[in-house]
Length: 183
Image 1 (cartoon, rainbow, N blue to C red):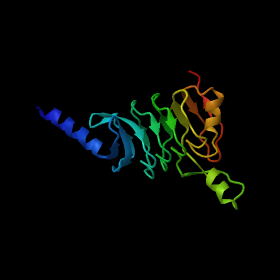
Image 2: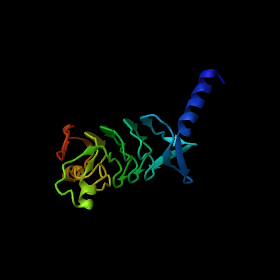
Image 3: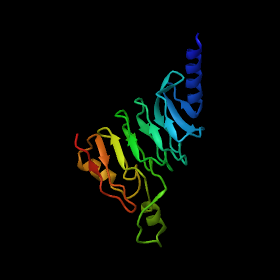
Image 4: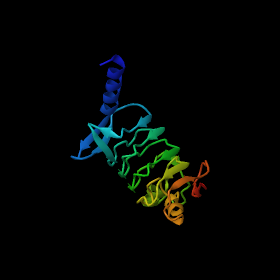
């Protein structure tokens, strides 16, 4: 085996070692990340099995700036990327479910009118930094998959849950106006 092949094999094994995961028998679920990088590429397979899910809280608290998701992925758990710093997100067409608070960032304060109601504050205080989301058709989302009170789900549903790219302006207060980009 030549040195280039050995280096590539080592690099692949090292990259996969950054991820904690569960082998479900026929696929892999990512359960955590041990690396320090803020630009993360999730592999399409580990140990010869496809990576199909990212578990709840797997990347929680990691200030990710760039994320590449594999085409094998079908499910993203709640709060999986809580605390991220993503502005642009491309979700492969293979993803069919994104759970509650999956991409909420906890870094972008929104205008809140009733500071004495703890539940209200928790629900509307934080949004994500996301300004551009690209995803497929008929993805099962919750109202807060991409942040609280930003009404992404409303725009996605109003467009018949059709896939494509959705954008919103870069604003400092409550940003609720998403627009589907014409293709």
